[in-house]
Amino acid sequence: MAANVVILIHGMGSHQVGWSAEWIACLEANAKLFAPYAAGKRELSEDLEFVEIAYDEPVFELGYRQRWKDLAGALQDAALPAALKPALTELAQLQDAKLPEFAWTHLLDPLLWFGLNQARQAVIAEVGAQIATAMVGAQAKAANVHLLAHSLGTSVIHDTLLCLAADKPSGFDPKKGGKRFSTLVTVANVSRLLNAWESPSDKLPTAAFKPHSSRVRPGDLVADFVNVRHRSDPFTFPRCFTPDWSAPSVRTLEPDRFDELMHVHDLATQVDHPVVARKILSLFTGRETLGTKAGEMDAAWERYGKRYGKSGLFAFQNLASLLEPDANRDLGPGELARYLTAYAREALA
Image 1 (cartoon, rainbow, N blue to C red):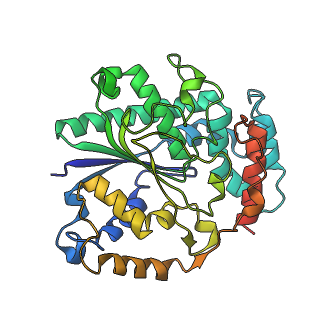
Image 2: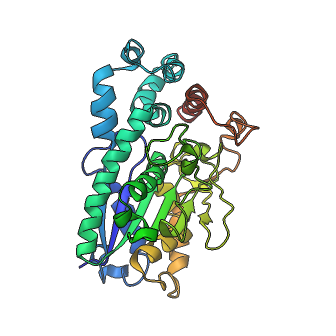
């Protein structure tokens, strides 16, 4: 029986039941590069139990997309919050036929999360309930609990952990008898970019949700924290997550290769990096000797080089200054929408 439960939290875009199969396949493929998983001698599923968290369909899809139908429908909604109108207007003005569809299926999620506190609270409630259920199951098996979040999911898990600790301290606040999560791995961390401008909790002030100073850090709500950031990922350019914490600190890993520029933000592009894969898998499985057998890392690097033959540290650099120079100033939904549309234009070109 697996002694480790890994909770997976997706990012923006449509995610239906079973969405995590691609992530699991990515982790399994990387595990097979290292003993004891190489040559089919042991399956990763013998050591890890995966639990997928889904919030897109119950909140964004059913709560907003199906009601609005499209961006034009959203703008005609008399109940549309004033804070969101400039952002959705920005998206609706896109001319390229591909862009409005991409905006509707992907970019709407972070805008709703960022600009509409009601949506943020609904996501936190949905994710919190699913994590609580997973935690009960893990405790019954005396399993360690790890978290892997990507993109929008990094902001979602950040706020959810804070709210769980405040609402259910006996279960989720280590300082009050709750269980500490063993590992938090964030890939393409946008928690600062999408930082709450209004508290989603009636028990915590807005300042408690500042990622660089919050309780979501090693030694507090989580034991270990790994942050993975692709150097060419434009979503991590503005308000980059770079906490200056004393030990124990977050470990930041920065892949720099890709197959196609459109994929630099993808989880697989970043997790397939041999150092990233080895670190994540060793933390999740507790096997500290992964990748130390002769030739294993050489084979992993060869596979990585064949899959990801491009590098470009100057990719998307024209976006780097759009939300600067004031890196600490709070953003508005309209500003975020303009940045997201600029990204979409370049990425889909």
